[in-house]
Image (cartoon, rainbow, N blue to C red; front, top):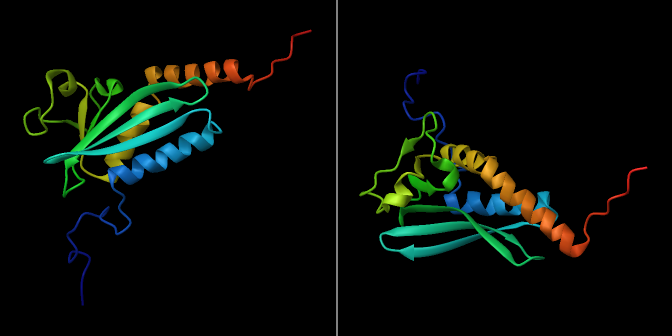
Length: 160
């Protein structure tokens, strides 16, 4: 009979683990749904041995505008740990480590904006930070506003 001490594995180790690519695609779909397609997320996946590189761009099709929001990098065979690189990650985050410059082949400019995620929960924590950052919000609101301006998507009524 097993006791409570027989399973020493991490409690968050489960079978429905998503890769960083799957999480980013999930968020691209959520963005398109939230903005009714006015702003979309595009995830690109490229190989640069020994790394797999992901990018997440914001697109506003109506105005032909694209903005690189983040990049990610991990060893091809192992999607974790993954390094996320974004302007909004330049400030320290509790419980999230900075990525080692030489191990992850980061430039000096990337190093200050690179954070290491060991689990899908870490990835989601970092994405929430990136998506809700004031710079990101400014880009998103600008893309929606300019798209509405071009398409006439929002009708305002004059105040009486």
